[in-house]
Structures are given as C-alpha cells and as structure tokens.
Amino acid sequence: MTSAIHDALVKHLIRPDGQEDLCFATYVPSTGAMRTTGIINEIILPNEGDRNVHWNVGFMPEYFERAIRIARGKKQGLVFLHSHLTPGWQGMSKDDLVAETRLAPAAFATTSLPLLGLTMGTDGACSARFWIKDPHVKRSYQRFWCENVRVIGKKLSITFNDYLLKPAFNSEQQLRTISAWGPKIQEDLSRIKIVIAGLGSVGSIIAEILARAGFSNFILIDFDLVELKNLDRCSGMFKEDVGRYKVDTVRDSILKSATSPDVNVRVVPFSICEKEGFHAALDGDVVFSCVDRPWPRQVLNFISYAHLVPVIDGGILVRTNSNNTRIIGADWKAQTVGYKRACLECLGQYKTENAILERNGFLDDPSYVLGLLEDKAYKEAHENVFPFSSNLASLEVLQLLSLFIAPSGLANVGQQMFHFTLGTMDQDKTKGCCPECYFQSIVGKGDSTGVQVYDRHLVAENARAIQRSTTK
Image (cartoon, rainbow, N blue to C red):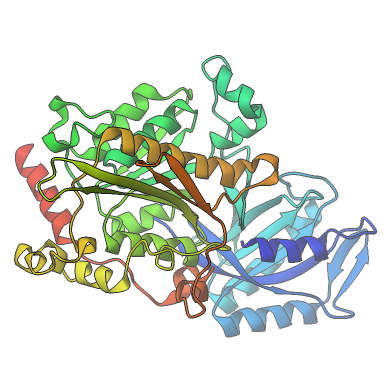
C-alpha cells in the first residue's frame, strides 16, 4: 500500500482510547510469476452506526453490504481490516477467524477475487492473508498467509511474516556489517527479495555487493550471453564463462560471495520486456534497473508506479573524442523512482518515442540506426570501464539502504550525479513529474491498468536460440 493509505488506516484503526477498530477497503491484484500481491486501493470508512466498538469491535450487515457494492462496482477485491492491541506481525483470534471465514464466500462470489484480511498492530505494522476457495470442498475457503506487507512512500517499510520468511544471517561472517546498523535491520535485509534487471557491468557488481552484505534472496533477469567484451567490466565473469547465460554466471558468483547461510537465487533468462521477465520482476520487493535501453526502462518505470515496486536506476555517459582515443568526461546518475518520486521519463532517463522504436525493432536494425547517428540516445553506448561501473553500482546500493534503513530519518537522497572530470557530486531532491505525467495516473493500479508493456523481444529470442545451439 502507499504511505498515504497506510497513514489513513493508522489514523482510523489505532484509536486514542486504546480500543480495537475495523474498516473495509478495496484492492487490486498484482500478479507475478510466483507471487500475488494485493494493492490496497480505497478505504471504505464506517458511517455512524456501522459498527460497535466495545474493546472488541463488530460491524453491522449494512456496512459489509455497502463495502461489497463498492468493491464490485470498482471491479476490485474486498479487504477486511481490523486492529489488535499489540505491536508487530499479528496472528488471528477465534473471533477473527469466525469473521473472515464468514466474509470470504460472499466476497469471492460478488467480486470474483479472494477476501484479503489484514490486521494492524499498535506500531502500525500489518499482517495479511488471502482466503482462497477450496476447489474440492463446497463453500470452503483456505487461509493463505502473506510473506510480507509493504508500505511504500519516501521510505520502504516492510513487515515480515517470521514463519514464511525466516531471517538468514551469519553474525560471525557479517560482524562488521551488523555493527553498522544492528541485527534487526540485518535480519530484515536478509529477507528482502531483490530483483536485478540487466547483468552487465553495473548489475553484476550490484549482485556482488549485496551478496557480501548478507542479502539472501535474488531474482536475476537477463537474456544475454557472456562475451569476451564483457570481461573487462563485469564482476564474476571469466573466459570460461563465454557463451553462458549471464544469469547463470552471476548466480554462481553470488553463491561464492554470499555471507548469508541461506541464499536463494532464481535465474530468468528473459528480457524484462518479455512476459516472463516482467512477471518475475513483480515477485520482488525492490528492483535494480541496470539496463541501458529505452524500452526496458519504460517497462521498469511502469512497474514502479502501477505495481508499487520501487525501482533503483542508474546510467553512465562517457564522452570521448571522435576516434575514442581520449576521454573528455564521464558522468553517472543514480535515482530511486516510484510513488512519491519523479519517474524515469520525467527525469530524462528515456523518451517514449525511443521506447516505441525499440519495441518495434527499429533500434536493432543497423540500416535504421545508421540514419540516427546524430542522436546519441539512439546508439548503444560502448564506452564504459569497470571503475565507473563500480562507483555507480555502489551509489545504487546506497540508494537502497537509504530507502529501507532511512538513517537519521532520511530515506530520500534524491537523484545523484557524479562528475568524473571534476570529482564532484550533484544532488537533486526537488525534481518532480510534469503535471500530465501518465505514470502518476496509474499509481497502485496493478493488473487493472489495462496496459500490456511487454511483448515479443526478438533480440532476446535470438540470444536464447544461440545458447541452445551451442549447448547441444
């Protein structure tokens, strides 16, 4: 949920008199490859007489019927929310079970989506579960607990289900790391699901940094194969890896570098612009954008707003003389995009028209690209070196740590730009989206946007064909 939704729920559910309270809301699904998320969309507060507050709390049938009508009218699922008088992830009392098992059949029958139950503790932490219809038993609904509940605003706050996502850290191997921010934060960092889209120079180094820092859950998305030209600027890639998928090579590197005792790495040899890559990204809590083309950036921009998954992006521009024998300057940027922040398009990181050209295959047509040499944005950038990539990778990881840890209460460091020639860094927290920005209009809409941003990706299909032919 957004921080605005969360703040409104805290205001209603955490009562000054210390009693429990309840309300309904609607949600839209966000369907990943292996995980379904419910994005809370609209709170339906009770009217006078809709519920009885008496330490425990009960609601009137009319309130439930009104909430069901609203959810059905919006073509969204129903959420039943109530508060408990203790902090942290909450279990369920007998009364909670009775209430939600009675609501589940009507909610599903009316909306065709499972009931989402959510409980808030006194500290604002939430627990959640879906009630899924049992296909084998009439009018029977099974409770499926959620792995976590995420609140995204300037800061990313996550409440984890300790039974489904156990912490995985090694206090001896991570002694220095834990001493920087304490065991509780290290426990939570080990449970964040990290997506890295693009495993070239920056993405491979980010994977190395996170593995050594104790992160335990990775989803690697890249269709490309290791080539000789990758070896001078990628981490964990060697001559014997040439011809392998980058996702496989980086997975092996993570497993060698990891300090966590329990590391999970899922490899997705597809483009983020393909159906498989797109849905895999929705399984993550944070996505690192390590791509250098407009269409992938557009897809990641869409994910960050429609599906409320923050995206940390970066890019490098190296300027040389005409025959690439002398460097003139180099600059690199890192920024986090998503709700409460400016989007990649408004930050000038890609243009919609270029994304459309790439999606239609023109940017991979040599004859077409030759006619666009005056526009650097259309050309694939080859000028890059390991020191530049490693500095940008570090900046992107620091963006994640600020987003999640919020040292001294500061979670948004803004867009950062480092100038190699001057050795200086600019920082801009003021940039926002233009008033007509499309992405601000789809915040939290999940699967209901009606827009399909992925498609066939011929370059990715060709890379997989090459890999299959060389391994026969």
